[in-house]
Image (cartoon, rainbow, N blue to C red; front, side, top):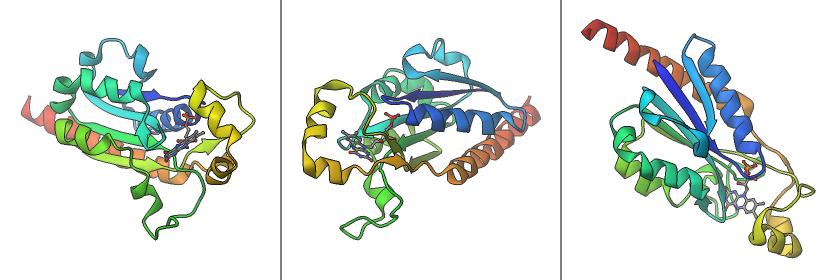
Length: 185
Ligand SMILES: Cc1cc2nc3c(=O)[nH]c(=O)nc-3n(C[C@H](O)[C@H](O)[C@H](O)COP(=O)(O)O)c2cc1C
């Protein structure tokens, strides 16, 4: 059972989540490849996929969305889990009284999920360092806006126990899939 953990990151927080997921999947002996989505190589060689990207301005990073769209026929036929990193902070309920993680689901998730029917999709709190070099015009502009500074709390809010628990659940499910495939062989 070969698993690809593929990620799209701008500042590294999502790569860290993907790394933790990959290490957690390896613990019970699964064969894991960890790659940025743009260097994923031969996608069809993998039996299952965990695909993650950061959320910016309500959207999943474009490379992650393009990766899923490009490989949708392979992905639709194999077990897939999607995750997103962002929002920032620790509040589980947002200013509108909604579940903060549900509200932060990237706009693309519903459409992609309808196409590839993932076994799971998840939003994790992310990380933001206001002193890191801004990437792109949008980030440079938001740094100048006081309202944006308030809306983007600085810090590393990645919830490692939640991330590991999610990955453990994936490992268990994949082990069941592998046992089922052996029994059918
Ligand atoms: C300019 C800017 C816009 C952001 N927009 C969103 C957003 O719309 N939704 C969200 O959940 N998180 C948002 N975030 C938080 C990022 O998703 C979070 O920092 C993420 O963990 C970054 O991942 P990366 O380091 O892998 O790029 C934003 C962050 C910045 C700096």
